[in-house]
Image 1 (cartoon, rainbow, N blue to C red):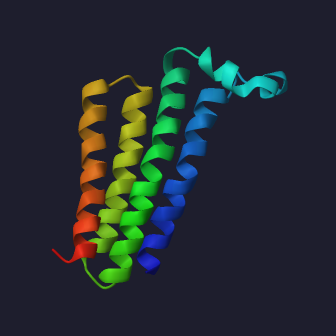
Image 2: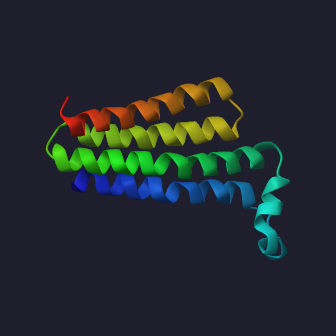
Image 3: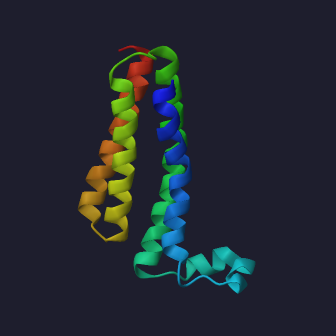
Length: 127
């Protein structure tokens, strides 16, 4: 079980790093009154960082559920930590590609991350 705690924690806080990329140097305290309106006006890499931020929140529950179920059902399986860290690596690559506007690579890396989640679910089902 310990092999999944850190990857789940990293996946949980990763979206905040991405919103930092979108905000640093452009977000002011005045913008905090209407954050969503400010976000809607973003362009370029800031808009892509914000989109990656949102997608990271969307991907997190799938990964967390898959990792926890796999750890409960197959806690000593050698693939468990590899799949969890594979997901984290894929999310980092995905975010990089998103911010850098590398759409094709981003989609491929997204698929790899979701494949890690699917494999975790299969591990949990002991298939």
